[in-house]
Length: 126
Image 1 (tube, helix red, strand yellow):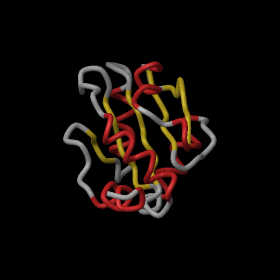
Image 2 (tube, helix red, strand yellow; image 1 turned 90 degrees about the vertical axis):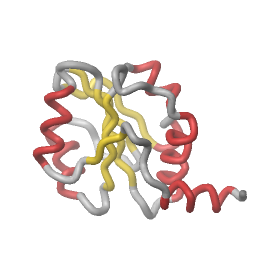
Image 3 (spheres, helix red, strand yellow; image 1 turned 120 degrees about the horizontal axis):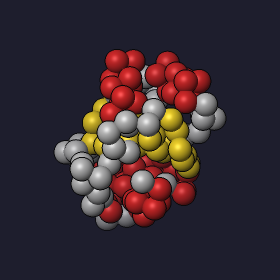
Image 4 (cartoon, helix red, strand yellow; image 1 turned 30 degrees about the vertical axis):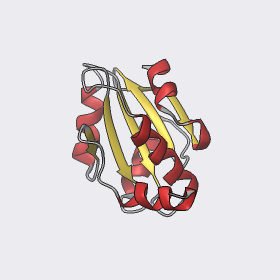
């Protein structure tokens, strides 16, 4: 399978079973609230961006983090732009795409974007 085929497969595939989606402000607040119990990661993904597709594919391919270690939330930022903007404003993190933001105790404690997104980076920062 070629590189571009892998991106298409990644974009079209279902999310890993333990990833949760954010489509409403209430779901975003639930994720923030959950960060008081354990680390939470927010993955802001642009479904039309090749770099974002590559980051998503890499996470899916290497995913071995348990739901006990980290709650992982996926946001299609093109479909839910207002929520993406709310994340940037409320958490004080400059918008990037793709982007992963790690929350602990209701605050953003780490964020990274583009080619720096990986399972290894998540593990190191949770």
